[in-house]
Amino acid sequence: MPKINRYVDISTVDREAKKDYIDRHSPFISCESTAKAGESFPVTVRVGNEYTHPDDFDHFIRNVALYNNETLLAEATFAAGTLGGQGQKGHAETTFHITQSGKKLKLTAIAYCTKHGLWECEPVDVTVE
Amino acid sequence: MPKINRYVDISTVDREAKKDYIDRHSPFISCESTAKAGESFPVTVRVGNEYTHPDDFDHFIRNVALYNNETLLAEATFAAGTLGGQGQKGHAETTFHITQSGKKLKLTAIAYCTKHGLWECEPVDVTVE
Amino acid sequence: MPKINRYVDISTVDREAKKDYIDRHSPFISCESTAKAGESFPVTVRVGNEYTHPDDFDHFIRNVALYNNETLLAEATFAAGTLGGQGQKGHAETTFHITQSGKKLKLTAIAYCTKHGLWECEPVDVTVE
Amino acid sequence: MPKINRYVDISTVDREAKKDYIDRHSPFISCESTAKAGESFPVTVRVGNEYTHPDDFDHFIRNVALYNNETLLAEATFAAGTLGGQGQKGHAETTFHITQSGKKLKLTAIAYCTKHGLWECEPVDVTVE
Image 1 (cartoon, each protein chain N blue to C red):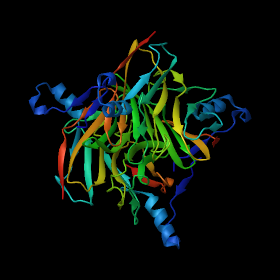
Image 2 (cartoon, rainbow over the protein chains, first blue to last red):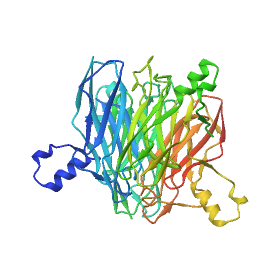
Image 3 (cartoon, each protein chain N blue to C red):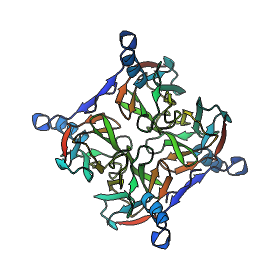
Image 4 (tube, rainbow over the protein chains, first blue to last red):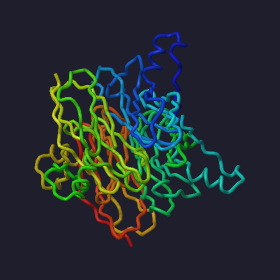
């Protein structure tokens, strides 16, 4: 029953270490709020907004999955070392291009850290016109 | 925020269609209750216990992930057609071999259906001696 | 022994159908020719340069893997429907961000079509300064 | 252009270190030579026949893919640590269950080591009756 950690607005968190822990593990989706039906729509998922994550062999961001509601759209998997390797830190980041014909999307991303498990962002609503 | 469906004991469910729906999507773990430290330990994950799942191009079991607590151990990904293909039904099934040195394992499996999303089993406890 | 198809410059190919077949399955890497050591470096992999690929349930681009020499850096996996779905066509496209400290990269991408197998591009050399 | 290493019969190899290197990276398929159409058919892929492979964080067998001719049937991905972890060695091993309706299968497996890249076995022919 792997726990899925959910992002908490870190401005509401007091302890610096906890802000860092939450932020560096959480996936953040950036995309326009409106997509055109039938046109390629870029969606960027980046892990960590203000804080970077280690890229050590035994502790790295292994994958990020992008869902629309319950449906998996795409997943990116990373090797340790993609963010600079042992002793370095960074943001795992991928831009997917999706083309949709529905009326709206509810996008969510789930990231997986090899030490601290699954992390999920708040859903992002996109209108498709 | 893809919902993760959790297995419900289908003997407590009245409607046949609902029994079928729950059972055919749920991963079931089978393994011994005790593993020997440092020895290869087979863990089988099978999707559906009494009911089979379609293997259509637009509706199939795409992957099964095996976790120990929050840690991903292994994942199997299937192409549509692995269970007989269009119009056929079956059980997605994989046996992983894991070697552990800890004191105990809490194994969970999560299966993903391309139409009905994520499904999780009850955790299975294994003692490592 | 799955054959790995290799890109052939389609300007040397006569038949339109063959140009289309080769181009729409081949991954194309775009990135700068020089990366800065320790800085995030975007690498875009797009399948098909001039021609688009179907996105049908039984025929779609399932994944794209990015290698540096023999080492896997990252992989993106797509569901059928990410490019518009049944009857639609498009370019599977992902931008990875990699941070490297070596002296140079030799990047290659391999794409997998569920009907026509594995396709590989010419390696792309990147100097890391 | 990641090189794909191909298995060489190690009885033809003189140097012990080379036998070990080749064997411990090569996937070996075991299954019956005949499958029944429409019935579940177990196929085991094990990496290393006589020699075991490290399971260190920076050096492990990350995945094994099973193909029928050019078509991917299933893939298993492992975390470092699945075979005992740092300092331990073992065989990455998975049993897939596939159901086929064709006349024959030509199965090949490709394994990926995070240090020594892609390794492929000789194809295994299966008659489907």
